Image 1 (cartoon, rainbow, N blue to C red):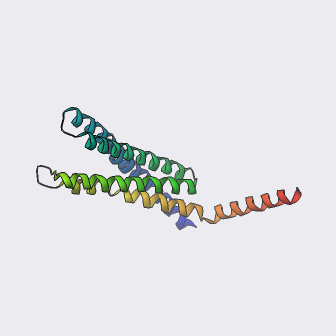
Image 2: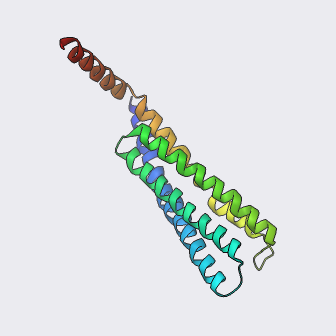
Image 3: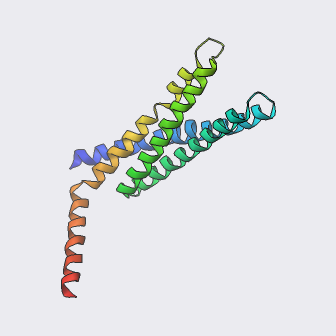
Length: 168
């Protein structure tokens, strides 16, 4: 029991730090940057209409995934475990989809930085550690959901509902 409490506290610390770094910093700002850059480059004539709309949509989806992951973190800390798993999973699926599509767009264009490192590789290295956040929320929610105390509370609530129904 003591080991589980230590594990939960450690996971919560990792969760808070990873939330600040990944969904809030990299993903939220990355999504806002994609929207801004798509608008700026389209107005400068550097992007076609279809590239503009696809990059803008990817930015909006990245923003959405960040908001979903942040909501899942708050719910996980407040012990609403199943809803946090659903929100985190949906946010993570949207995030991975956007990351794959963005990497494919950048690979097609062949963009690289001043050291000739491809931007697709840079995007992957900077954003993929969001997996850490996903795994921590998932683990923490499952530990809370299947903890002895929570299972006992659900059993008491179920028995109380059965008793109320039998009285009617």
